[in-house]
Image 1 (spheres, rainbow, N blue to C red):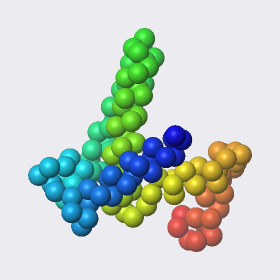
Image 2: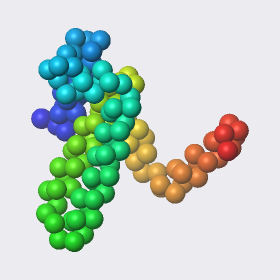
Image 3: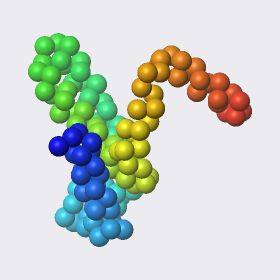
Image 4: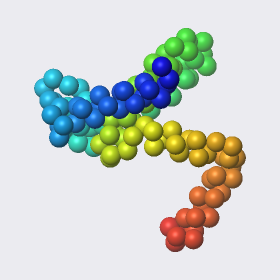
Length: 122
């Protein structure tokens, strides 16, 4: 089973927990987050991002790397809840990463700035 299969299965579970799809906020953590709205799951993403940073710092000080893996898993999970809310799938993110493959990060960032200038955003 591929990692993409795992992401797709998890995305399907998250999708099934949406209140619009019958998810019960009394019985499902995901349904509860989605029922509360974006502020709830976006706050959780912020918390998990901070915990990820703290875990990485702990690894720098000799902690087991499994703590970092655990926190990144929480961050990814809560990000998937946000993706589901906004009608985006993990496959969309994977496709974006594939699009960037082989691009220099510096070149890609410069291209975004040029496009933003051309669109009058900057």
